[in-house]
Amino acid sequence: MDIGTIIAGLLTLAILTFLYRDNPIYKFAESLLIGVSIGYTLVIVWSTTLMDILFRPLFDSGQLVLIVPLVLGLLMFSRFHPRTAPLSRIPIAVMIGSGAGVAIPVMLEARTLRQMTATVGPLISDGGFDFSVLVVLVGVLSTLSYFYFSREHEGLFGRVSKIGTYFLMVFFGTTFGYTVMSRMSTFIGRMEFLLTDFLRITK
Amino acid sequence: MRRLQPRHWVFLGLLVVITVAMLLRVPLALRTSPETQRLYDYLNELPEGSVLLISFDHEASSLPEIRPIAEAILRHAFERDHKLIGLALLAEGTVIGYRLMEQVAAEYGRTYGEDYVYLGFKPQFIAAILSMGESIPVTFPVDYLGSPYTSLPLSVDIGSYADVAGVISITDGSLTTHWIEYAGARYNLRVLGGVTAAMVTTYDPYVSSGQMHAMIGGLRGAAEYEQLIRVSGGGLRGMLAQSASHIYILLLVLLGNIIYWREQRKAGKR
Image 1: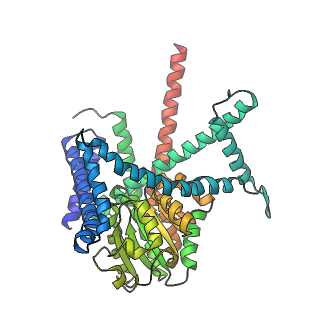
Image 2: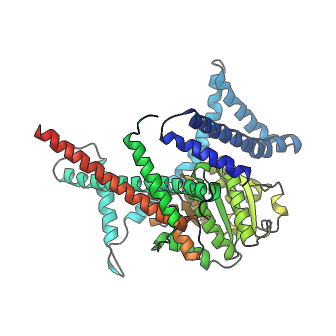
Image 3: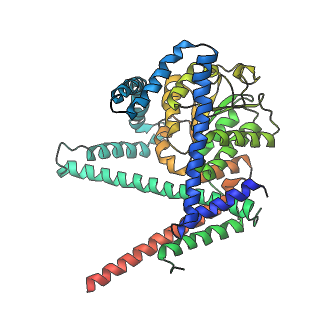
């Protein structure tokens, strides 16, 4: 058995000890995970971002235009002193401005227009009446009515918004069910590692 | 030693259920979902030698669930002789993606540089996705191993999304959404996904609206895919344990409700 498997097996067991109660072995494994994750991310970002995209092209290839992002990046550090803190608004403004400019058109297209198109599909198609289209239509309209707060939820409007809450509950239930499934899958994956690679009980 | 509390018994019960189910190794027959079938059909019907982007957009913590999904997709792609360009938009997925591609490529005797390339990690995922739409060599001047992008036989002719058939984003979060919104909506790149079960409801509307072509969801999806490609992997091996754990949780929910109902009745009598 290689050293990596032994370390991974022992750390998995250390993390699982939390199921009994909080303890120093768990805390050690948790701190190690956080430390390794941050260290790994720092190394990756340093080598593939700062070195590859900024420092090497700027200092080795002389791409002077890169001074602009370098200065903007350095201005972010001005937040650490109260007197220079306002300068950090410049790179933040650039980020928000460019980010919003890029994001708004595509999000409007992908999240609103195309979803609306999918919602108002034909109720009757070649194969006859499409019940699922009706369910989607009723679900969208009733759920939207639930989030309309400019009018009292009473009478017909109240009943429609009540139907919306049922659709919401189905969504929450489904999402929760999938989340449980996901957590179980993670546990099963670790158990398979423990039983097969670490303890070698199964093949 | 402290006295065990009810939650400890619940955990112990789950441990026993999953361990026994995994030791039994009974294969379950699964019905393939339309989303999984669509991804299988897509890879199956692509002409041999088509170039696909595989984006490892996940963290290390979700590896137990992500691994069977990624392995199933990679096995099918390599078996069909497609050419794969791997990358990661989350730093933690970088080395995981490389190792998975290297491992599955070795199973099928594929060669680095000719059959697959790994570009590594690029920060600021939205900028990276948009930049690749304009030029992949500019976004990734060198690959993960440090070779110039244009020096590799596979990538030398791949300039942008126009030269690839699609992207398969393997994710445990919302990163596939950005592939859909920026690469799909803007560059008409076909987006497919391998996602953790917790993210299935997030991506369902995109599949329904046709913005996401197909999706494998969670360990179950991986098992369905393994069944389709006739390879026994982590998905199929874990299915009995998955089903047993769900039944166990359902029984606990029922038990909890019965206890609650009885206590309510007792309180009503008093």
